[in-house]
Amino acid sequence: MLGRHFLQLLAVSTCAFAGVHELWWNITYVEDANPDGLYERRVIGVNGTWPPPPISVDTSDSLLLHVSNGLDQPTTMHHHGMFFNSTSWMDGALSVSQCGIPPGQTFDYVVPINTSEQYGTYWAHAHAGGQYVDGLRTPLVLHPPKETYQYDEEFTVVLGDWYHQEHEVLMKQFINIANPGGAEPVPDSALIYFAQNATYLPPIPGMSPSPVTSAVGFNENSTLPFVPGRTYRLRVINTSAFSAFFFWIDGHDMRIIEVDGTDVQESPIDVLSISAAQRYSVLVEARNDTSSNWLIHANMDTDMFDKVPSTLNPNITSSITYAAGESITDLGPISDYGSINDTALVPTIPVPQPPATKTIDLEFMFDTMNDGTNRGMMNGVVYNSPLVPAIMSELSLGSNATVQEAYGPYSYMLDHLEVVDIVIKNADKGMHPFHLHGHKFQIVNRADQYNSTDPALNPPLVEGQANPMRRDTVAIPAGSSVTLRVVADNPGAWLLHCHVEWHLQAGLAVQFIEAPIQAQERAVGQVPSFIYDQCAALGNLDSGNAAGHASATDLSGLPLGPYQQKLGWLTKGILAMTGCVLTAVIGMLTVMWYSMGTGDSEEEMEQEARRRMETKEKRGRLFGLFKKTT
Image 1 (tube, one colour):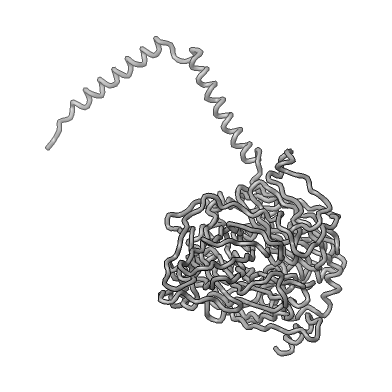
Image 2 (cartoon, helix red, strand yellow):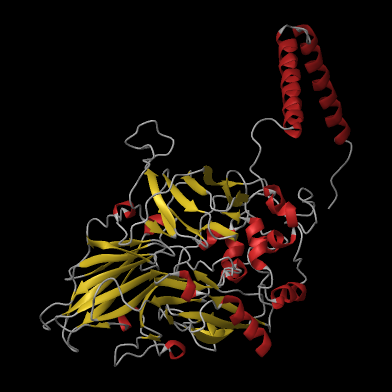
């Protein structure tokens, strides 16, 4: 064990004086958690507690997270937004960067923060089997030696939707022929809670929260302590599986200073619209009086839901406390939430837009498939997990690793250091947040209607932008498109997917295979052997193409589909229609034959009537020969 840890550290340490922030997590089930006060349920937590502990790391350190799997199913941990510097086997995306941690085994995640030049607000969550829906999610904050903005104190605000049923149960209902329209599971409630550095804030004194989660304040049982005259940084993270949120504070102004780990010039905002997986930091000036406390609002975006159950309260609140015991001021609902134009935000560190050398168009939609279920597709392809994790294919295929087809039909090849425009077009009726692993992208263009010929709705891309906005998760409204400019400077295998967990599970993803030759060169002596051992323990393949073959083209056995229903006339339909037409023709000819007088004459019909009457009279006389007996 010690030798393995030493090799891990040796693989990522480039500075002899860099520290190591080391954590030990045992992923376990936790029974009877009840954070919303409405329903006790089993959740997935860490070291027997829930929620999992927040992570706070100095940027001079690397993070070494030992994750032991105490569940009865494989698990992983993804540090959302981290680059991993050519070590994408540490990214935690099941079937892309690893096979999964088998029950009873440990994976040592090395996050080279000290060499990534990253800082700001991130989060960590499971990336296997929808486990973060069941609670395996937590804030991750990276602190640089000197922050861009000055403030007196900071808090992390954790938002999330919450389900009373486990993901596995909900998933069976979602991907089901009884749900051909693809209505996603609607959350049962919403949560807001707070952290400061590596500790959660407790409940308001005098409250009686559920015992299992009694150390943490949730919703109306939580509060942020403010002191008049101070400036606070609030790091707002949406950890939802589905819902976006609208966040605001009564009686206080907010100024955006950070977006997904990118510091930006101050931008005043009344309401934060924040999609799943996005993060914003805002500065908030405390009021100069303590005569009242104030409500914090977090309203779910119910437009995303197929229907809003009568049992759901989509608008949750917490509070800011200046003086315990004072009343809480509620300024009531607001008429217009608005939205954030992230392309108007300006990073504090300029990065000019480089010229693009390649464009990849990705149009996504949902449809009822030939198996009766509703699935997501990108360019008509439903994402299915490959039999071999993509990074392992990339490292094992040798010269064949540069063949895009070897990774499955949902894969796209990126050459080393080429500049790629990824144009994502939303043909669906709802908003979708898309996340790219291993990179920050520049948002270089948006269109309100990507299929419009009106330049006001579908403007041309402007080249030569001095400093486009950079982030890792972007919201794409219905019918619109976004153009993401990405520099392929991180060899490995990286997932691009919708961060609505139900949509990822329904197939709304692609994978980018980046710089295979450079990935192979940089991986020599760096990949821990336990990664392959865990594939073997799970009975999974760990080499060859996506289907496990030492070939660039033979994908036999690779899971594919389902496929869109074929429109038009199929063989069975043609035969059925032919039979219907022939029956109708025969019937019409019969009617015509009778109408043309080819049947019995009136005289013949009269004779037939008389014959029947005579027969009836004879039957009557015959029946009269017998007497009824008693």
